[in-house]
Image (cartoon, rainbow, N blue to C red; front, side):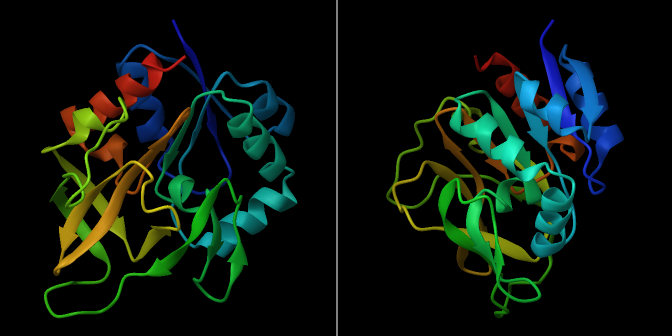
Length: 208
């Protein structure tokens, strides 16, 4: 049985995340202890709320550095919602805030356009970006499936070649999930996405 540590930083559907991971065979520990996070083999960072507030909590609790070290060491990481957004360099919600900087890019508010409600909320189908082939083993099973979203901000990677899947919302391509090496992170909530969401959790457990 694979042991998974879920970061409890005060924001996120922790019970639902715990249940989903347990349902696919994980032994789950929830913790806000920096030492426990530093020693984790598989780390899940969920979160809801504002980018800046999240980073403030992580810095205050001494958690930002262990998360960053976990990722750069090559150990498996699954980010959910804010757990995706904070991987990037900056976020603009309520002013400019520094993220973990693992990936180049920023997190910006979804533009208000005709046909694009903000927040983007509900079930949306995930597909590959126009003109790009999805290759990462963690992303391929997502293609064509429906996942549950609730967010007003989107990540905008600097590296346009970064492997990703998207949703189409009001004529825009919005990043639904990204993957790079040991990192798998999604804007949607797999813990609320039934069978399709469980497949994401299962794929994460299969990473070494």
